[in-house]
Length: 408
Image (cartoon, rainbow, N blue to C red):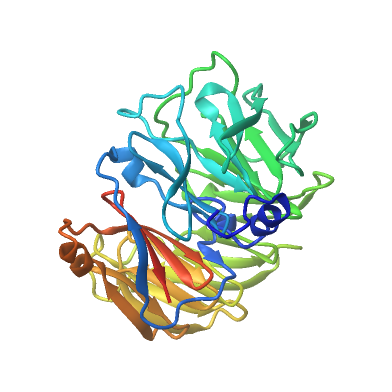
């Protein structure tokens, strides 16, 4: 959208193949994308306020890329924005839910198609994002201990017959059925179907499924953290390639980052070999969890303990070389709810007043005071909630629902 001739099918198809932020956590939960970063202080290309946004619309992030940007607005309508101007191009209401009491469904973007994973309603709804046309639905009929997969190589058309997957013996109990999606593979596990009551809250073991180009990753998190496990299955055959301790934090075609007992290990995707492990505790009394905040092709951002800091205080944003695990530098303290994103080897992060960018050694490249810009527009400043990189641009959503496009 927004590019002259975009309506032509060939142009739209080409733009749909460009790097895009396909889930709220980026491709493979990496919070990273291979696009040209902004290395100097940007300007605001456009901004779009949302004075009617409810709490759940404000908490939503932004998906997409050069073809269009997707976010929730108003009373939880899924909205496509023109990335050039911020103009609203299409709107898909969220049906079957009360926007005052529940949030929107998980959304995965596959080219021009949005997959709305309506687990509570036992279906996955495929919608052509830019035209707001319902394409097809996948009914979910999954037994409690079943794991099934559908190939969606062409998300414009319905998938074929589901095939069963067999996981290695993992101690688990997953009364909350759920779906997952990645690289053209739709996955579902446990107790999904019409009339199945899904608990709103569950304390216990949780099994999540992810898909990369060659693997299906089963990630089991447990109350007993010593029992947390992951298994990597061959996507084509379903055979188990390797298993490891911990739960999946982020993954791509080359590697899988797993967290276990306060440390992060990077495994080779092919055979599970350990490349490196980083223990991010600030000292013997620090029991905080080291977490992956971004996993790029050459750079990894971790959240680690702050030496001498309070146990429940901010953590430190640490940058590592992806190949060796060597610490390159720190980008300052960061809270759990402060977003981070990678564009190649430039790290974007929220700050007290706006956003900033850091080089791979942690050196600050630039910062932008969005609070001052808001006041200049007669608006009330609002903290940054989500960051979505594009080529030479950064899309920012603040907690009041405003979306801004920064351009370098």
